[in-house]
Amino acid sequence: MTGSAPLVTIIVPGRDIAAFAPAALDSLRNQTEQRWTAILVDDGSTDDTAEIFAAAREDSRFRLIRHPDSRGLGAARNAALELVDTPFLGFLDGDDELSPTALDRFLTTLQTTQSDFVAAAYVRSRFDGTTYVSGRVQPWVAAATDPQRLATTIVEHPHASSNIVAWSKVSRTGFWDDLRFPEGVAYEDQLVAQRMYTGARAFDVIPDVAVHWRLRADGTSITQGKARLPVLRDYLGALRGGIRTLHDAGASAAVRARLELILAMDVPPLQEIAGTHPDPAYSAEVAAFVAELRALPEFADAHPDPTLADALAW
Image (cartoon, rainbow, N blue to C red):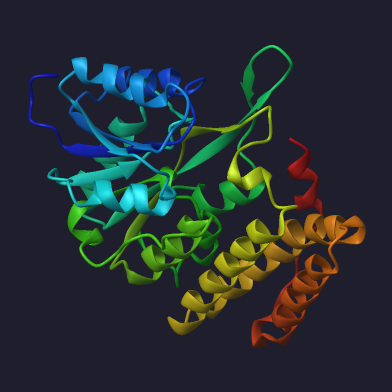
């Protein structure tokens, strides 16, 4: 199988992830579907990430792009997108891991349905003091991916909009001809995800766990830095952009589904941070965002589930 022409390119960006990159690359090597190639993007690392990526090229399926200075995750992914020459493409952050059957399941589904992309479930991996342990599929992920739906749309399946990460999906490469990530901001995949849902002729969702998403023990990942005001602004900008994309596409039920999830899970932790944050601008940003949500016509029909916030504890 390794001698066959590759079917899918996996784009693997990373910056200062030397502690985790070997596991990410091994998760590619261990796929049951071996017809893949990978583009590794070292985004200006100051540790051994570049060396680990370079050594991976002993396997000819790995290619390498090196950015001398960090340009951000969006720019790293966009640089690799220009080089994709396979029928399908996907993403894997360099500190996460694919489940062994992920590529097999993605490709088998797309080859059956002819949809533009397929989205799968994922779980978080947390440090328990000794090692990283994966948890269960969270409720909002399950709502997006379970049960399996083939050749669906965002109008037919509005809760798909809660799966907002780039790395839980594999697409037909042509679907990305006019699609790129925003650069210079964090949470760049949230807006792209909603553009995928609203721009697809049809997409698939499957309940299989494809990715183990690592929450780093040292708290250095972008998603763990929301107490910093610049990160908060990028975060709120991504949420706004995603809602706007759904609204402009006429996907009112998807807007309502996003509102319910944001109000239940995103807003309460931000309000808690705002309550003790030393910079009053933080509280003002959060309050302005909540006011915007309340002004949306879909707000009156939104019924957030407060128990979803409990899932953040795992």
